[in-house]
Length: 482
Image (cartoon, rainbow, N blue to C red; front, side, top):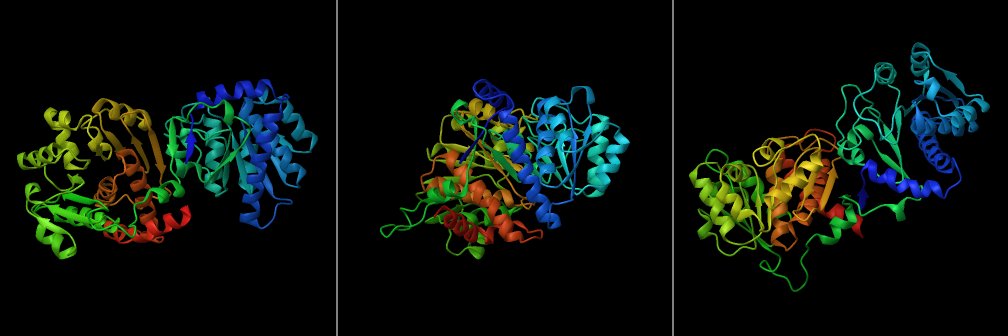
């Protein structure tokens, strides 16, 4: 598990470190980290570094200074470096002098910068840092577009310029980085806009003791693998957790098949299904005990309710029955819509061990969603009194007590119909096994994304393929945890 801090928190932590550190030392350390990543990118892409061409897109202030000092380090290793100064009168003086001393080339005209980018092997984006917001200004955008058109990879210094550091929302024109190097601590942009950042390298500049508790965390394989329920010698089907699934309908029987099957594959000890798709569930998953109603289902430790359920009176009654049982509940899809429509259902859910898993459209039915997805999810969890998992390329999970995690997906393979039903089944199985809703949501999102990568294997995959890949994903995560 690692933490994510806001830019303001990072800047506050830097102040005492800067006060006790010789002037320029932190910038030099950061620049060496950037240069090391740039050298590794050059070696990986071109097979060598000597004589290779790097262009530093240099903005004003410290971010530009990081780039100039990185250019200095690259010149010392035989790389040809050109710095394009976007604000010549505000370029970092020491970094600029150091680069010139190493015979680095400096240009100020945009057309000369575009020509240099066209011939480059790599571009360093040192245009703006975490203190900026909004898209790129025209001259900077022209240079970033030139790199994209020429297919020149970009290494971002701290953040990809033009992408909001707090929300990860790209401006109208922004940098798409092949890799990012950040300093001291990861910022929200690195997990909320992971595809824009590429792999993120964190350079330690000694901020750790000065940082407050992380407002956002990111789970890693050891966190998930250590908590994933597996049977012990004394376990049986009941002690491993029995999950009930109230989902599907005559119109959407597939939702029930996907959710119930995912719960079974996620190592639930037993799955009980209740609903009108009982015949389809039995045909696909003979190990699932299927009945027509929640009242007939028998004893369970948690419920999954909502996928394909419908939002009519019968659906509302099913959700009410599940909430009245006093057990952990995962409410997805139509159940989220029903919560938005019925105040009495929201009152039943508030304060109970309930996890809701909306996509953006469903989220808007129960709470206000802004560009600040972390803030929106945290407020929704507090206001509704339930744990909220907001689906998306970056999945955000917030508990009513303020805990927040983000899972930055490495791909978009999950953007297909039915994958949310699979997630519901997995998270429901974890609730039945005794995980608290926040951990159940985070672990389920992690394995769900891994299953998508395994199931896709480089090509689009339907929800049933993600479902089939769950055992392999669980196995891989547990092996990484050892």
